[in-house]
Amino acid sequence: MTYNIDFVGKRKLFFGISVLLIIAGVVSLFVQQLNLGIDFVSGTRLDISMGKAVNIDQSKKLLTDLGYTEPNARVGGKQADVLIFRTSQTITATKVSAIEDAFNKQFATKVNIQSQVVDPIIGRELARNAIIATLLACVAIVIYVSIRFEHRFAIAAVVTLFYDALFTIGIFSIFQIEVDVVFIAAILTIIGYSINDTIVIFDRIRENFQKMQPKKWDDLANMVNESIRQTLVRSLNTVVTVLFAALALVILGGESIRNFSLALVLGLISGAYSSIFIASQIWIVWTWKSMQKKLESAKRNFV
Image 1 (cartoon, rainbow, N blue to C red):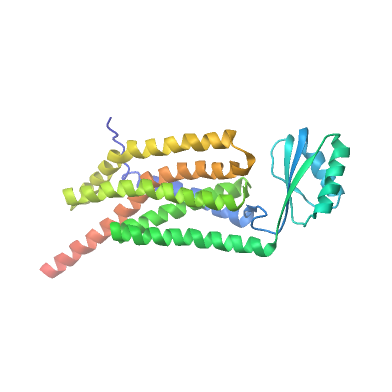
Image 2: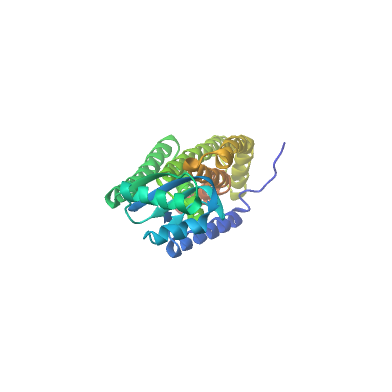
């Protein structure tokens, strides 16, 4: 099957869409910030197993009446049989027992509560380590791709990786989905899948560039378009296969891995988009400018 899509010719459209998506995410980060879980901020998380569906608003009011101000419910909807609350206050084991008694009395059911308390120092350390891990991964990728290919390929690849990460983070900020330490694992996984797709396309571009030796913009654009077309089915098949597994985790997985699965789904979609529509376009723009400089330099030397 032949795909006659002019990927290079529509590069400005792709760049524009990408910039708008990133701007929306960045604005949300400044206005709403991230809904950080207690992995990154001090406080207590309560996983309350009710045994039956109860009203979430009534449950929040009960906690407020007990002195835990502004408890944040992670579950959606109006009713749930497993409630996940987060509060900035530290709740001891004795206080957890008191909460169990209050819920038992209020809803006439057997309640089981699991609590998790995070110290603010630990939260800051986790956040710092998460940033360092992401930056180290990007530095390692730049070094590897520069050695394996060239620096233009490396920079283009890292730009798309930052796009994938910012896109996923932005969506989590816009919809105020809780970000915990598992989310960082999802971001690093996304980086791995995205760079894999990008490298496949870049490898074909390098092969075709050496074979065709384009000298004009049209020849260079046709070469890049052909390279993307040659790897398009492979890239889409890889992403769709993993996407099915990630969607199954979102729908059927437990609460503890749902945010990881959701981040993975968003990252896979973004990674496929950026590998096909952004990375190669960045490379060709940069490469053409470099070729033009060499041509102008050659003309001056000839004269």
